[in-house]
Amino acid sequence: MTLPSPLYVILDPSAAKGRDPGAVLDAILAGGGRLVQLRDKTTPLARLLPLAQALRRRCREAGALFIANDRADLALALEADGLHVGQEDLPAPMARRLLRPGMILGVSTHDEAQARRALRDGADYVAVGSIFPTGTKAGFQLVGTALLRQLRREIPVPLVAIGGITEANAGEVVDAGADVVAVISAVCGAPDPEAATRRLLDRIRDAMRAGRPPGPSLTASGESL
Amino acid sequence: MTLPSPLYVILDPSAAKGRDPGAVLDAILAGGGRLVQLRDKTTPLARLLPLAQALRRRCREAGALFIANDRADLALALEADGLHVGQEDLPAPMARRLLRPGMILGVSTHDEAQARRALRDGADYVAVGSIFPTGTKAGFQLVGTALLRQLRREIPVPLVAIGGITEANAGEVVDAGADVVAVISAVCGAPDPEAATRRLLDRIRDAMRAGRPPGPSLTASGESL
Image (tube, rainbow over all chains, first blue to last red; front, side, top):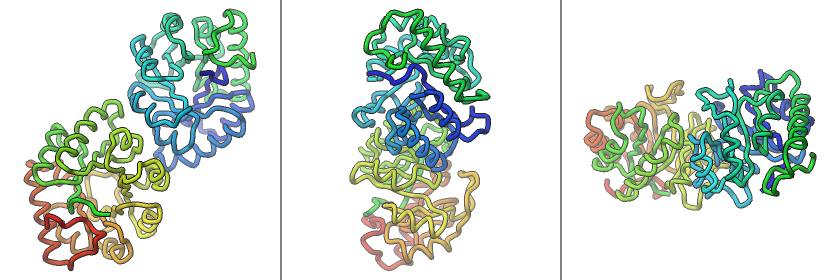
């Protein structure tokens, strides 16, 4: 499968410094973001739902993919494009069975064994992290870029790097083998999320152009490269 | 629809005083409980799942209904008999659409308007509470037995009373119009959950025999009355 963007912006309202998540999403879309995940682990679902529905609509209008975090029922109710699960969430094989055909399933992994299992379990992309120390996730496991280099050789689906990635180190992550760079704070917490999105996309595309041979068709789409 | 028991035991591991939830469930089943809900708002799903699967299996073997709380994805993954949602959870109409045909949908309500809406939204039973003060749910809304009396006249599906119900006041709840009495602490926190289940069932059946004319077929099954 192909992801529509080498930048994956995870919209976590708690990382948006009190700003309206809808406004942050608009900035992401205006900055060129085309792959968005809604991640909110704390708001009760009934209260989150109107926001989630509005964000889902805006993504559809902008031609961006909208991925729900953790809850397959939310992903289904929103008719999201996909679901992202972590190691503590609904196991990937169960999530796969619940999702409608064509829905994207992404899985967070923190070591080689988890990444291999995610692949066996039918993950459409494998997320790897935390690449760098991060303030967004308590108790993160630091894996560095080494795990990306290692997995690059054996994971044929898009590899999504996550955790502590900024404009300053995004290139390094691409060089290590990431097809997609995922960020939370670097966009949601930026003074200007639109500009931050644009600059991150530029950095990632520059790094892809400079350092890597043309990838297999399985990697993230390079249409805007 | 018919519920298989006038006693609804909500198994919340955090109310089980450190005892093994599987052992508590066995006691409930041995005591005659045939309607069980698993309610765990805190354990990450991946960790909860093996327990939930084991409980689900035991309920099936015992001929008891097994209802999942809050998460439709968990209910579906477990092939539970139904899902219970509160006012802060996935809205009932969305839950209804996600559940497989024949699955039971129950909704917690705290006033007349919510109960009417639950009915319109396709609830198979309407739960009403908190009837009495309870220690299990922070920030509960106290509705008393008055709301039961009021709703009894207009809600044609089983009315489930919940919140602070014990052996001492279960009869009062039945007299007010409850078809089903739901408990958490009164069983999960009891010194002997099996005996507590049995005594509660006795009290409820006594009250039903003594005080009420034979109910419509819509009310909870009286097969063992």
